[in-house]
Every structure is written in structure tokens, then in C-alpha cells.
Image 1 (cartoon, rainbow, N blue to C red):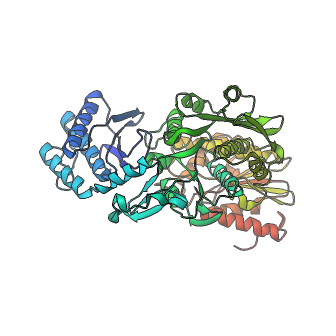
Image 2: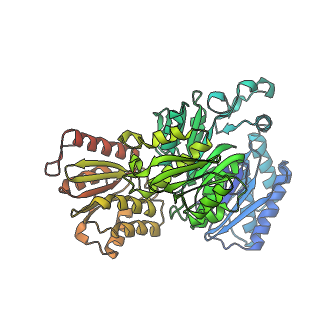
Length: 592
């Protein structure tokens, strides 16, 4: 954002550096707020954007207006080397329109920003901004790379052409001449994009294991960091374009699996111009209210942005059990591959009749149909990730990953061999459906971060509950709407926990004060018949886990959705240490 949004009639103004929800290229988008959108305002905005683009020599591309419950997203394409200037154009066009049409005092003044009240002055300022930012050699390099079928990776500091073993990078301030680029040494590598509301990281890790088993040096990015051949080279949430670029700039990487989260798509767009295959695991209620996304249809449209970078020889892998995705994917022109829990699903049957690719469960076995051949990948209940067949959401992830792997060219026998072992060790999929036993006490750790994810986790955990008690640690990121936080509590209450420990999530407060989310959860739990005495507040994630372990008896089941990276590592280390020393629920916990 080029100016502060405090008291201004837009919520966010940002660059789009790659293919995005609105168009295939780079540009800018502005989210309106606090103003009723009508045709007069939109016509005024369009006219001023077109005026500015003519003055800057940017050419004529379609303007995009996406109306939504909170206002509208106003977007347009712009030259890749002048995106900061594009945000200035967008802000001026909107504010100047409000000043004229609504006589609104927009509170901005030259010379810091284009003058909303003086068109000639504003265009003078915008020309100065664009001239200062312009790098004419950059679009020429991008065109040359695209003509050779090569991916370009751009951030604020570095410009790269190619990927992995075929990448070369230069500082943005020292771009090479076209004839100085070693074109014959550059190439792209196999790339898979993984998006969806739940299951992304598990699918990414499983795919990476399959690619490694195939003999590729594999890099992947996810919410836990950036990894090459299983070794972490960076930690934190790298599920956006920055993580993708970091993976693809590793000169030893021969294949890449890139988690592609909603936030990164909306904030900046996709990092790559092309991918071999992409998968959308599912969509569920999450993050509503951000960037103009207020419902499942809007969220599905964001996730399906990955289809924009698939060519005619690519494959978009979609969950046939998700009715919203099915409806929207039907309108896309890219080749589709379907996965489902039931291999007899009508969409899968129809796809096979056309020799398309599918994956689903038949008679307890996972069947992959690819390139006209049916492959039996093994008994689902014997695959560790399936948790003896009870984790239906992980079975869906398994089917999705198998189909993506096949599209990358990984043989079915390698896919099957990985499925037979992956998930048997805690290190395979840290923080996702990890399971410990301490005598008759069972403990589950997972990343479940939205109502659907928590429902799936609790469904698996309570299958082995017996006559014991259910204990749960519960928290939520601060950038969820209050209704979404209450829905998380409603799901938890539906499983009748005897103890709920409410926490904050360090690093995910996102504007909330300490205990604010816990208070919303508490109220919703009580409204859904969870007794007050069953609810405890312990805002530190690790202390919350220790408190629940101290409460537990033999036969109980504890469910620990743990989200902060450091907290999750500490919890796993604690549980591994307790298991190594033979701890049981009748023994005091060791001092931390």
C-alpha cells in the first residue's frame, strides 16, 4: 500500500505481481470500504484510470470490478516494472472520483500524493512516480524469457529466469542485457501447486516424498518453512509467493511442490507463470471478510486461480466431493483430473470414460487411473496417513497427492511404496495428525485451524475414546471474523469435551488483544452447553498443553491443535520426551 488506509475510503491498495483472481498478468488492486458503490463512482474510477494510463503510455487493458458484500475490488493490469506507480494511479482515480461525485474530503494533498482536486497536478505527479520507478530493460527480459518458455521470478530485490537447476538470478538494480543472459543454460523444472482450505501441507509433504523417491532432488514450501530434500533452509509460514520463489531459486532443486495459500494469491498473485499440475484439495469456511471474500464461492474462485498457470498439457486436480469446486471447475478450460473418496463417483466414472485421470477408493483399495491404466495403490487402511482408514480427510489428501504425482510422471509403483510408509514416523508430517500413547492415554497433535479441520480431527480422535474423557486445547488466529471463531467453538462443543483449555496463538494475534479470542470462544462454548467449570483459560500454547496433560487420566483422549511453529516444536519435543521416559498420566509432569 502506498498510503495509509487510516480514515480513508479504501481498506487496502496493493501490487499484484503475478496471475491473480482478476487477470493473468501483473497490476494493482484497491479494496473500497465505507462507501456505497454505484455506477457513477465506478464510471468515474474507470475514466480516471484510463486517463492516467494514457498519460503514462501503459496501453489499454480491461479494468476489473469485483463487487462484494463489503464494497468492491478495483483492479487493472500495469507494466511489471511500474507496480508501485500503479497503486498510486488506482488510489488517485478512486479518491478523485469520490471528491468529484460525492464531494468527499479525501484528506490527501500534493506533493506526497497525486492531488485529488487537481487533475493536471495529479498527472504530473504520476508521471514523476512512473519515471522514477521505470526499468525498461525488465519487460524486455520478461518477453524474451516467455518467448523461450521460461519462468521469471521477481521480487523487490532479485530478478530470476528459470527454475531450480536451470535458474540464474541478478539484483534488480543490475539487470543484464538480453544477449548477456546464458539462455542455453536456463530451464524450468517440474512444478506442482497445492491449494485448498485444509490438507495443503500434508499433501505437499506427501508429494515431496514421492518426488524424492522418484530420484528428484525436491524442494517444497509450506506453512512450516522452505525445505530441500527434507532439510529446512528457512522456517515460518512460506505458503505464499515468497516461499515459492525461495524454493525455485535453489540451484540444486530438480522438482518443486509449492503450497499456495489464499492469502498469497490475494495479496500478490502467483509466483510462477506456468506449472505442470495444480490441486485444489477443498474449500471450507475460513478467512471470510478479508480482501473482499465473504463466502465459499468467492473462496473457491481464489483457489482456482492456480488454473491460470496451467497450459493445455497441464492438469488441474480437483476434489469431486466438494460441490462448490465442482460447480466452478466445470467452467474452466484446462484439463481436469478428479479425486474422491468413492472411485464410483459419477464424475470419476465419466472422466475415465474419456481416458482422463482419476483417483478414489474401491473395495478398500486406492485406485489410480492414469493414461488409460488402472493402478491398485494398496489397501487404504494400511496406509499410515489414513489412521487405519478412519481419517477420511487424509484419505482425500492421499488420493489428491497420488493423482498429482502421476501427472508429474512419477510411476505408480513408487507412489504406492510411499503411501505404504509415509506417516509412520512423526518426522514425516510434523504437526499433522500426530499420535502418541501413554498407557491408555492418547494424545493427538494437529494444525486444525478452521471448523472443518477441527471437525475432522475430533472425528478421528474420538473413534478410540471409549469410556474416557475428551480434553481439548482451543484457539484461533485473530484475523478471523467473530462468527468464524464462534463456529469453531460450536464444532468443539458438538463433541462434548470434559475440558477445554483456551489459548492465544503467538504470532497470530493480528490486531486482537490478549484473551480477546479466548473470550469469544468461551461465550460460544457456554452457549452450546459446555459447562463453565469445564472451560479453563491459559493463553500460552505450551502452558495450555502442559495443563491439559496434568489434568488427564488413563483412558482419556487429548486433542491439541497447535499452531505457532515454535510452540508446535516444543509440544512435540515434550511428548517425545515423555514417551521416551515411559511417562503415564498418573505421574507428575517434569519441570519445563
